[in-house]
Amino acid sequence: MTTTADTAPPPRPPESEPPAAEATTHDHGAFFWACLVDGWAVIVFGLHGILSNRDNPPALFRLLIGLNIVNDALVAPVLVVVAVAVRRVVPRWALVPVEVGLIATATLCLYAYPLVGGFGKSVRAGSSRLPWNYAHNLLVVLAAVWVVCALMALWSWRRTSSNPG
Amino acid sequence: MVEVPEHDDPGEPERPGALARAKGRATAVATPLLEKAEEGSAKVSGRFSSPLHDEWVAAVLGIALGVAFTVCFLTGLVDYLAQHPPHWFHLPVAPVNLYRVTEGVHILTGIATIPLLLAKLWTVWPKLFAWPPIADIAQALERLSLIPLVGGSLFLLFTGVVNIDYWYGPMPFFFPTAHFWTAWMVVGALVVHIGAKTATARTALARGPHPDEEGDDEEAGAEGVAARPEPAGVAARLATPRPAGLGRRGFLATLFATAGLLVVVVAGETVAPLRKLALLAPRNPTVGPQSLPVNQTAVEAGVTTSAVDPSYRLEVSGNCRSPRSFTLDQLRALPQRSAGLPITCVEGWSAAAAWRGISLPALLALVGAPAGSPVEVVSLEDGSRLYSSSVVDSAHASHPDTLLALELNGAALDLDHGYPLRLIAPDRPGVLQTKWVHKVVVL
Image 1 (tube, rainbow over the protein chains, first blue to last red):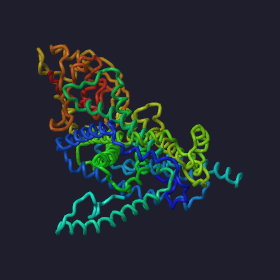
Image 2 (image 1 turned 45 degrees about the vertical axis):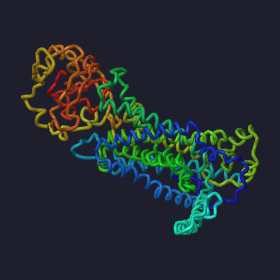
Image 3 (image 1 turned 135 degrees about the vertical axis):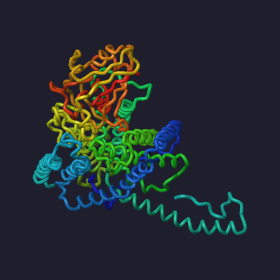
Image 4 (image 1 turned 180 degrees about the horizontal axis):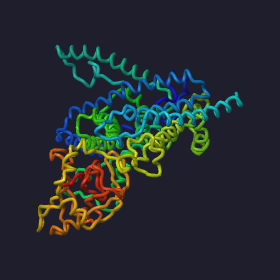
């Protein structure tokens, strides 16, 4: 997800608004406790279902924890690096279209990866399973996305060049 | 900063001896470490200057995800119970597209959630470095619930996507039950999260997106903030130069547009008017034998010989007055009924088709089965295979449109569609529309 980059911040003016958001987080009222107790009861119910089902719970938990780690330790940092790089490389007038294009592209590629890889195909399963050329179709969809982004960039460039101040 | 009581804390009596000396040494070591950790945390958090890492974006995405996960959970619950029905659950026989809609909504909502979830996790990622990580036992339990919430949500989306793409390699477990029970954990964690974050989200939403640097927020700033007393911090922020790139609203608009795009390029596998746009759908509802997809072929089921055996008979037995068996010609000679019924698979695709065959209640009447009897329909497949038989509950078994079909779209069933005989009934998952039927047992 490439977005406005995380960089060394420009000097920010002092905040005088009350930091209400975080301050209220730890006010453990009745609603908080009700949700905490009920929520954990449901979590334990789900956990019990997984364990009592005995259908390879270790593999399930490995995947669940692994996805947690992959997101926090790999995906998020990589996105931050990409966001910083994009902000440094791409001219200001093209930044929004490029970021829009990259967000859509990353999401589409992530979703389409198993389709493009054809991992679910098999001769025995017949031709109706994964019937398309998904690499081709993904390129078509991405082309449509980037055409829209190019139009956005063109509009942004014209606006910038006609109003350089 | 985490306060570590000093040895000479007036509230704590002097404890002479080795224990006191050890405690003093531990404090001397721990205090600078904690201070350094706090400084490091503040330094890391300070680096996240993007306006997208704020509470308003997180709140909007959180609400969208809360709605999406609730829809997915409820529709998923229906789908799971329909596929593995306990004795107390019976999906109604009407409206005929009920299961088709719940399954389609489940899959498409899940797909739409992908960009929203990833963005939400990215938005709140800096909180990972918050210090102290745990303030009290309640917060510890709340933060612990983030493991099933984050990992479980990613797990649900990941397994959901690979399942609709028939990629079973990354799932060394039975998908339906793993998905089902993990969904419960995620919903529980979501409830905990709602309890912990409602106040934060409410405050952030009431404050609205800051009238900051972004061009697309200019109007919001003019309208939304002018109506309220403007704090000095907001005024000062207005004076700061605008960073380029996506602002908060643009970011959210991009995410929702991407979610919409994903839905559009997949939905045609179940929503007929969008069929031509379904470029990234795992199925095309018109591609397959007799223009209908097949989930399990005769080769996979191991029935290529038995299904075309000339000695084929349909046996009807069990709780009935006159059990009997029928040859294929005898079945064809029975009164036939036509029905337009959708076939809906748990992977999310569905297609309507014209079926023709023997109405199940008529067949049951023929063998003298008590009215309203449930039945078990058995396939020619090896009995040890999953879904090689299915139980048709009383309501479905007595519905005239529940057929033992001999024809599909005006022609004899293709072998892959269950030749010589298959079950087709309203509002049943595809895996329970048993193919290659050779036994009906009245229960």
